[in-house]
Image (cartoon, rainbow, N blue to C red; front, side, top):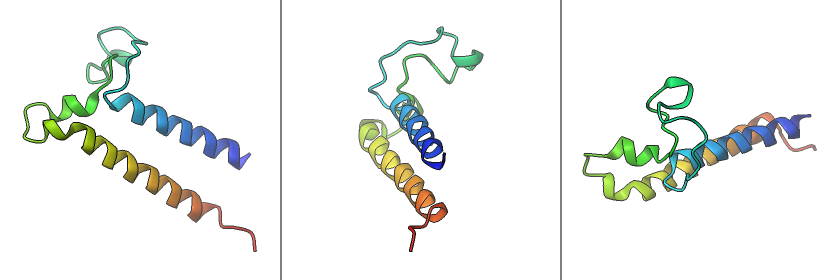
Amino acid sequence: MKRALWLAIATLTAAILFYVSRFWDFRLWPRDGLFGIEALRPQGGLVAQWLRGTDLAPFELLIWAIGAFLILTLLQKLYDLLNPPPE
């Protein structure tokens, strides 16, 4: 049961990371945003939207990659903390 829960958490995290990246190309909800929230636009690319108008905009992919790596590393550390190896 724990493995199924952690698999679901990892899948959800991957989907969220994919959505905030520039690689999301699906339009699964209307243009007014998910649940009417305009910030959750259907074409994804939220990192580029957040960095638009700043000096960091050209480094959007690098910032996304570093953030994704940190999030996945923290998720792995949390998994290791909550599921110690059997002795």
